[in-house]
Length: 638
Picture (cartoon, one colour):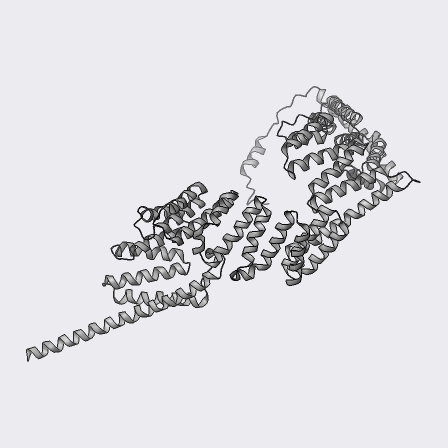
């Protein structure tokens, strides 16, 4: 009987154990199946995007990762004491968070795995993936620390991925040399896989490309291991390789590489761009007719596209800059705009077409004016048009050389010194900022300083050369003189009124200073302001109001657009609102007030100089004291 009971209990326990085992297998089986399905979706997604770091899981893929996290969490709840089962669940949860780009939660789970399951097989993967998640979470210093066990030994299964991540961290720390060293280490190791070496070549080429070391970049983009990368990375490598040659001005070789890319069926979507680049390289190589044939092929095969707009733009640019046929150039620019008005090249074409139309208008005006023999040409207008043409060449047509030619023509032909100074400074500035020729710019700046000292152009030339600005224009000198006069006026306003003789003298001194500023610098802003202060001085004296009005009218007529001209207009409008009778009454009232003030002042000084009388003490009677002491103001109202 005992044996039967024992056997029954044993069978019941086995049944329970089988049920729990089935539950675990069910959860983990579903989690792993979902993970495989999500991996397929992730692979397809990454194959179709240009940059893995800018791609995020789709709705379906994200939902599968959520279910994996749910299944793994149930395993952790039901089997907390079974380390093998919980380790697998924690790892799958961490991987799911990583694929969902939820870096903080992934890092937390990887930390949990290392803390409790460091002896399990997935620990090597955890070490690298945690460092990667820290990098993506922008915790660069901690990521570098976490990466140390990965790159410490070549036996680590993620050693080469670790070196690649280390190079990314070096890039973020603005240390491209260290990043290059890390990638070179991958290439130097013979045990590295062809795929990892291809990734290293690709990254190295990108670093050299950013550093504008075109030859090294071109070498790595054409490394044999690049063939092991996916289509997207191989296409990028081929395109950047051709651009490296273009930057070295090896235009025909660059065209050949673009032709090779054009023939690859996998890059069919990029063929219109490659065809345009072939035409551009051919044009830069000097084969103009061949380039136009290629551009016309783009226009016929891909009409109304951005590529067609770009092709027409290049044709217009050639006619504008090389042939100087502006009418034909405008026709091509119109075609570019019609092909794709919202594209970059469509917008640029419209701007250039409008600029060329303006340029032709100014040019025709000048040619017509100089061709007339019956009238004397307006040279002021002529050179103003020349300045406008130079500005259009520089800012709207990107032809700095043509702008310099126009400015040089102004300098040689203009007789007005102001026009010559302006053109000379503009030419030096173009060499400095647009042609990037500091030697020629320095020579031209120094010439301006020598020929036109004490001018605004000379001052700015000194500033552009990094010199101490020692030049002083007449405006600067006038400003200094005005500040002295203004300080005298301030001193006069602070003299006590009981010292009237000193007050009058101080204001008179300030008036003389303002008058001298205006006489010596009448056309400067400070000179005009000094003249305004003269009117203010006259206005303070009732007997000189007519003089103040005359000065205000002069300022309004001659310098009405200045702040002082506008202030003078305001004051004159206020005065014009008064009739002559009102002005006469105001003068009479002012005279009466002055007379009254003089009488009161005389009486005041008379009383002040008189001898003071002795004051007698008041006698208070006894009765008064009694009344005063017994009176209560709060209650005794009677």
